[in-house]
Amino acid sequence: MDRIPQHVSIIMDGNGRWAKARGLERVQGHFEGVESVRACLEAAAEDGVKYLSVYAFSEENWNRPQDEVIALMELMMRSMKNELHTFLDNNIRFVVLGNRARLSDTLNAAIDDLMNVTAGNTRTTLILFLSYSGQWDILQAAKKAAAELSPEEFQALSADDFSKYLITAGIPDPDLLIRTSGELRMSNYLLWQGAYTEFYFTDILWPDFRKPQFREALAEYARRDRRYGKVK
Image (tube, rainbow, N blue to C red; front, top):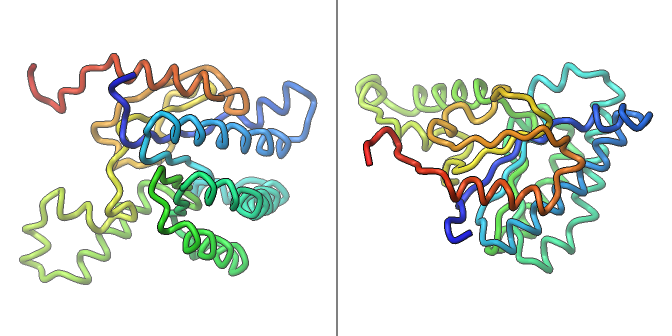
């Protein structure tokens, strides 16, 4: 465990299937999934992971049944309120990234309040990707760059320069991406930022993914040989 990734990102999948297998409403799986976020955040902070990001709600998720979307937004509000002391007591910074124009004013205000209160915390940063898609991120970055730069400057853009227009500007790309529940796809998540990310797939459903499973993923990452296209 001497090779700890700086940034671990998670596609949290399987909440609905977890609930269905127990005869529960889908939203109960989301409630239980919050406990997994808390457990993984604790493990990340304890083990020296500086950034933990989770794919909380994609732009495509707006197409889910309205009652489930409302329940997820209410869960977001409740979780932020409940975790305030956890963030402050454990020196955790809280960040939300995504197309926040689609969120309610009430939710955006609560997000801003929590981000401002925790802005000075330095132990670990928890990033929620909310109303996010990788394609949207790249498109909005291209529009920003085109509006700001002359045609000549735009043509001269390097990959590093372009990254500064992404919504993740200032945040290191994920070293390790974990996806639970046995699905083997990116689901329109961090398409640019994940160019050289190590992938870890597990059949475990997200509500069952806790500290031991998180640390197993870190151990697997430590065994990887990251070459970035080079020969070693």
